[in-house]
Length: 531
Image 1 (cartoon, rainbow, N blue to C red):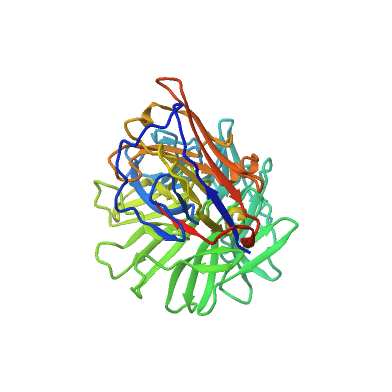
Image 2: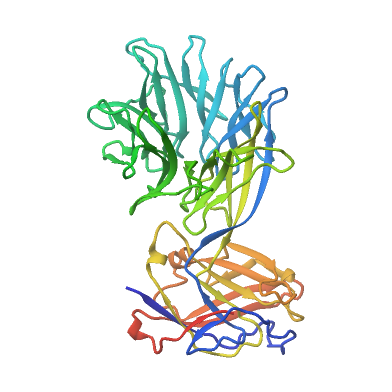
């Protein structure tokens, strides 16, 4: 069912009076109108995407510990804290930590090799370290010290623990590899406060399994295989709730999940071909509608492939893609979104890196940005940890231009309610005050701005309409407006309030809005796209 909205925008004033226009109507604005006019400010645009494109990318070389030759970044949290490892000339890795402003620190883990693999919102780190007995144990590290994560090892076999990620509650997941009597991978997890691994049975007849990620609901994601098959199937498992397995359609024979969001969406890798024969890989994204192969950065090359590594709460996935026939481009880190597809993140500036790989991303969209970590490689012996700071373009659901000289009109805009109720995405109302001789956006107190009582999620000063004047642009979260009661089915006005610093005068704009509960309840079928 589609729910239309109608908006009647009246002449809007601020600073107690409407000044005459001090700029001409901008030429070349895209306009698509049916039974409506949108030649003057104010105007409304109807859009359906929130995160819709990559606007810019800034890359930081995170460096290595003094004297080391390479490094890798594995994970990053919303505070921008990064973990990974730095490697010396003998190939020994050391768990490291990059707090802002990204000066590298060695973690006090073990006396030999170690690696930091995951970090949660509170800054607690997990990973593995080599023991004096030749095994590998896991660890948890925070400001309170270090805790060893072990396994009961009933048969006294040699084992390696690879602790991979932990959620905000502190539960760690990973894999135990036993070397005797034959190499077997086993899913393991350590609830917060425990130090000995719990080893679940993901499916009856399970021969092996690997765990790579856990979300804040306690759901574990990875890959599991049966004794009758050497191939894995991606799984999600939670204590007491059972298992969901899935793999890609033929000719795929293997798949595993490496990242899971709090909403249950997954990213991972599909392997096509036959066991022991020729094969190729492809990253996938999985939601309630099934598994979606993501392709590669070289879609027309039969030798191209990709793999997925992590996913955030906006369903933005990261990983790497490669094409063995592309000279000088062996492998490239990517960011994938359903709106813009697979985006090549490139390599570190001022480096002759031939390849790059993305390993992790922060869980939540930070205003209009996302952080991606991994590494870039110049040659076989030189790779450096990398941080990609990606600015995303946010396409709002409405764009309102209050202006200072608007003429009323009646656009009718149809909106699908699923876009507002979908828990995976947010939507935005954009309000843009056109700058001119009577408004300098830099004189506005940004902290005072609000729409129906809700503060903006994003505020900037830019020339939004290309007329040479700087404009004040604000994005207001639809979810925040609805949860606070600022936008309901009974809402009749959208009111923006703020303060101009130099004169202390109010900045005020009010737009009438009618929320139609059905298509028939709206007076016309006029649609507007502009300005």
